[in-house]
Image (tube, one colour):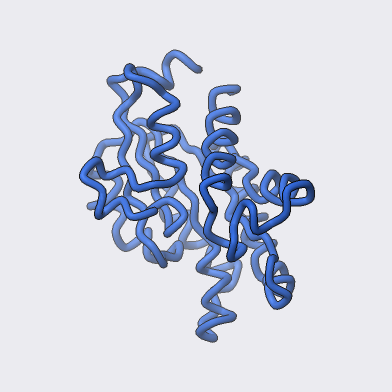
Length: 202
């Protein structure tokens, strides 16, 4: 798959929330300053066309609302999705929960009928604050949804939650995401390396 995946005639669209966004709307190149930019650099000069359509604060239902104009309009060959942490976070900071069932319905709406190769990235959390330990009750079922949908739709699953927590056990959570959610520079590099390693190994 490697050579075909890196074909410069192909288009990869990265969809998601702030972890993907990373200021891409203020970046003349449209890449932002996170893992998407790191992947762009890692792919080298003969890279595919890379499109970042992440928007900070988005939940899965928000991606559904803009899917046609922001994703499908680019006629992507590959779509990479990383969403879910805001579906958990809003329960705790705004008392606006999203059930795992509702999350799954929205996520399925993104995948159904999509004529592209799929890469699904686990939403992740590093509980660097005491209250964030309780978030796992809400987030873990959503991660299970992503894993199940990856298997059902034949997508490549990038195990970001597994890897971030594995690495955090050695280097500390704040090294990778100082607020537990938004990656640091080191965290974005970890995510880019994991994405590339997982996808190109297929």
